[in-house]
Image 1 (cartoon, rainbow, N blue to C red):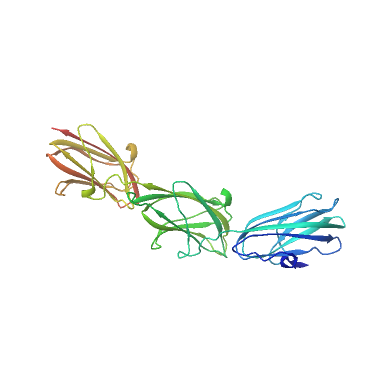
Image 2 (image 1 turned 135 degrees about the vertical axis):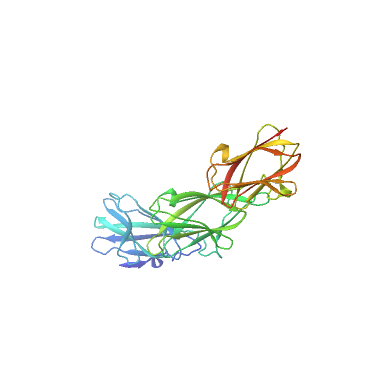
Length: 361
């Protein structure tokens, strides 16, 4: 027999609030167990406890699907010990809680149910959940599947003096557990163009970092296959603002002083900061320059190097063939004057080390 919880003091669950209710009843061996109906208007967590059973009896507790026939969770402890069912992320719909007399002729029982709606992230880019991301990790989690095929989160990176930010994203199942379905993550810019996309393969999630130009962005979470994949998920997110040391134009160039000793400068070029300029003034000198990845390692992207005079004439131009070895200018004679070194890229993010020296003749 299926019995509505609303007939026994329960109310249908709502999106905006949780419910905590209690039912007391009687179970008899020769009568069909009662099933109490629970309605969820939104994805919710459920905790159900059953106790106060009669001595020398055993009453189990089951959670059934909307048909009232399939058991989706159960608590079957020995003797008359209290029963507990705890389920997270139940999809909206109708379910049934059923006490079952497993031993004894009859027993009274007390059934308590607590439900908590899960805050729903927006399902479109026009209704996202806004996140204030910083260098301190933020965790958000929800469900995606056939009934909720897309979640959107909005965030911003960068600001004055910080033309670029780095987004760190880790995807796992709920509470850092395994996923139960494949998930696709898309990073979209303010025009909804996809900047980065990745899909999980199997139950293990993934982690990545993505450089982003200062601005507004969306994270879209969706099942890889909407008809098959569904899972509770957890995102761990943070952003790091990246300062711009070298200016982005000749007029905003970083002023440096060079002599016969090597001077080291470390920076990056990429999204939001594709040009770096260094300006120096020397007497007649032999000029040496070496551009590599950080600490002399290989570069992680294509870089163009230009040496310009004070009227912007290009004196030297070199370009790497993709990632790999660096670039060098060796023993180039410079007349007394002011010069500019320009480092640029079309790649998304390239860290570099720049070593320069000017030895007066």
